[in-house]
Amino acid sequence: VCERYMEYLYSSLDHNKEKIICNKSNEIDEFLKIPSESKRLGSKEIEIVGYKLYDDENVMKDYFEWDENINVEIKAVSYKNFTKEIENVGFGIAFRNRQGLDIITCTSLENNIKLEKLEKGQFIYANFKFKNILKPDEYFFLLNIELNDSHTINYFDFIENSMKIKIISDKKDFYSLVKINSEVNLYAN
Image (cartoon, rainbow, N blue to C red; front, side, top):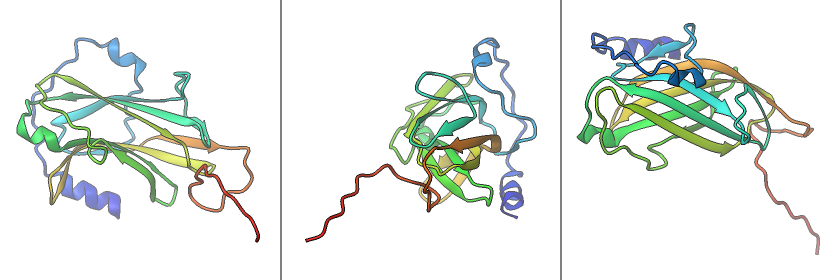
């Protein structure tokens, strides 16, 4: 229901834009392409053209261990010039469980990272790095680029289920959706 509602909200946006042909076709080969079966919506004024997930040894993979660093890079292209409104453009990622709940989300805007301007045909790269706190299971990976003013969010590109990620661990006790790496002390007096 949520997926159809999102599609309804953003399907009326203008899709009749001049597309720019990327002359550097070999440059995108290091990035994963967006699977054609992924659910996608948005105005596409800025469009995600590739992404990658990798560990600290720069190995791209679709599984990670608990407490391991996960690195994400998104490659996008702008199909128009942006000046003032670019300060409200955010790049985001999410890991969603099989029940449809976004367990981890992160955006450039919530981290106060902003672009100053953007020209038509320009590539944009967004990098994320975080310590994996997800419990062992399978998750869906989502990507988005949003225009977020103070009252509404409009998506340039929103991609659901771009890939399935598996989290593994040799730890035995996971009692919640995430497990933080913490120091715990216990004492009696």
